[in-house]
Length: 406
Image (tube, rainbow, N blue to C red; front, side, top):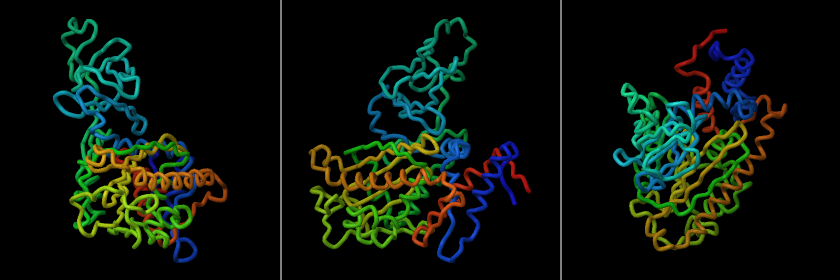
């Protein structure tokens, strides 16, 4: 039997061992699979390890690239336990840095966004070029030995994809093509390719931010299954009747499945009426009148329908609180012509509200004695066990940890 590194406190090791061992235990009855125990959703130590081993090591989708439209525009974003500056530079496109001055460590940017020719620390006026190098500081000319790159802002790895900025805080990031592109394309299949939706060319029609009083894993688990759909999503099951049977678009082993609209349904709108605008021009015949959904670990949901795309980004704040940003993306002409998108937005806004309320009602029970051994997954939820296994492998073992046999 193996468990966590020797530097982990004994109480934490015992707790981790219980959580991870439980995932492998059979439940009474052949139809059910176990879940992690409740402490996995409530313990600050476990959350801290998730921040360091998952969010600070993997690729995170942080913002729309077009939200930084001109050189000098910047925004800050929190990933794991770190605050990051994302800026559009003059020479190198979008760049990202730890929001830490190389001099004495003060935050360089002290508000959420702005536009400047340089980035200057307000403590001692150390000033950085948008490309990250130290550009100026009081008496810097009298210190010719100071290397302006070495004392520049510490960079963060950046990629642009689907019209979004993705960042990775790790020294050596996972291969983006394998970790992100490969997962997405595998789950969409060869015909149902995400490329057909032209997401990088779409424009933001609406964005809503939700403050959810629940652990981030509860939100992912909810998104991956539809066993709950008949109970809490009347509008969604009216548009996609098969969801009422409890089967989600996401399946075991990454099975590709598009969920069909109802026969009388005209569009993916809150009342099933036609949206009033054209379908995305490059979608394949098998994508017409179908909804696809995938999870890109650790914090992105992608939802596609014939005439628009919905993307969720999650930012865990604590073991019991998560910020979720949801974007609705449309063809540029829909936005430019100010065509009505309200009914399209309202459908998934209601789904979000219904889902997040369910997660918030679940969170308190994670600390109950009645849930100390965890819960169960029914067959239509069995694919969630793949997420649990991934989570367990991420938080239990890393390159910096040593396995200990007991």
